[in-house]
Length: 267
Image 1: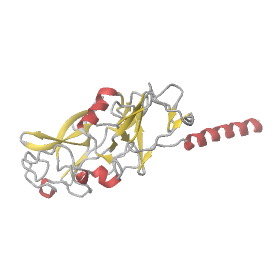
Image 2 (image 1 turned 180 degrees about the vertical axis):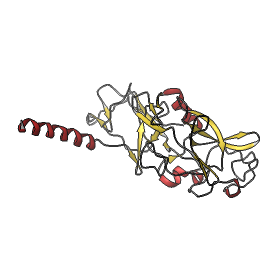
Image 3 (image 1 turned 45 degrees about the horizontal axis):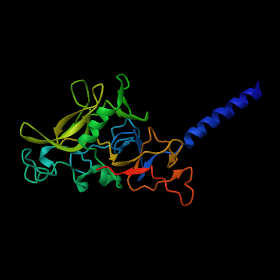
Image 4 (image 1 turned 90 degrees about the vertical axis):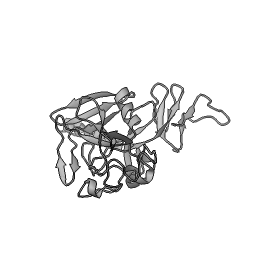
């Protein structure tokens, strides 16, 4: 009996150690997941400042790069006239955050940035969604079977007041894309309170969480049985970080050119 118990413990330990030993996808110190999206976009597994995938993390006004204690129009970086902010307005025509005003890029560096409206809608159009109402999470499964989790319980700050998410009230994550509402300059958010993600618009001065992304590149037309950076492509395609060194296995014989592998940059 003791011998059997010992064998079981060794097997379980080996399984645990093996799971811990699996390499993570890390860019500039932060983990991402490749969902196999058409654009190659890679999504962070956590919000800025969060310790877990379901944690809220830090809150930011749109276009600001530091958290603060009061998210009001009166102290918003780009002015207190919501119909005519000093940047990202009708005059300058800017519709996406500059990197200098992008909290994801400023705080995490590298190629991280706040997701665009199109990158959010790519999740909506290409992924499957499962929600848990009791534990308040949403699981997003990409075309390649990999998964991403969002909390359905992310509140936001209006002034110094924290507004908890509930039915009929958004659980928001900022997008980098501008919008307008009733003549005021707002910005898009991801809303995770429904049964799949959706988008709506929010006042830019409010405090909202951020889930960063990386603009990936697709490697396509990879022959069966080959791997890129140790990963097996799905349907001949694999997303990698832009600028990352590519290692193809099995090793290409000297003097042989594999013409069927193409690196397609994302526009």
